Image (cartoon, rainbow, N blue to C red; front, side, top):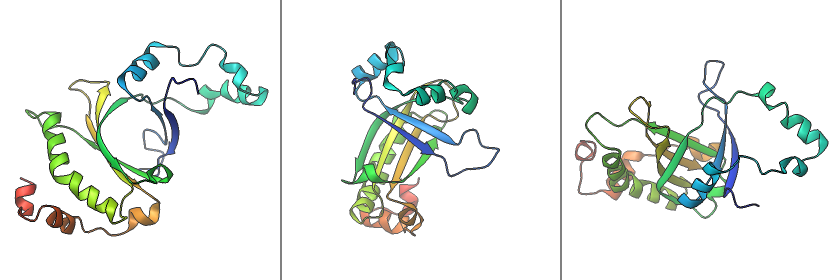
Length: 187
């Protein structure tokens, strides 16, 4: 309500799962445009009077946060491109795909492949009600050559049924790129 962020979500990680995984919940803060993101990063995380927003019981629970969870990592991603069905905000499943960039290549090269070949495929899948949305983002912070990945795409599904439905990706590739062979596309 104060305009410091555009949205906040909590996701449970369903895969991978088990005691060996790094984390099992993700919070997502949509910071909006660069000016909003800069304002957020430059200001205190909570407003001065944040305690007044909570009941006594809620405040007691918030004060136990460090007992209940461990913050494993914090990353800032910048949305490069995306497309979404009208009801994508009601979707229950998001599949995050993380990519490292080959030595000597640029993240922009990867983006161009995604935009030229995969974006039309995902647009067709959205039109066929096989997908609710898709986007591509760059890891903004932290950065550097020691990062395991620097680009991500997100496939957004209405529910597990839509996610688990068999999709012939090769058929979509041929439909959207009829003058290219699969070998040419993946070269």
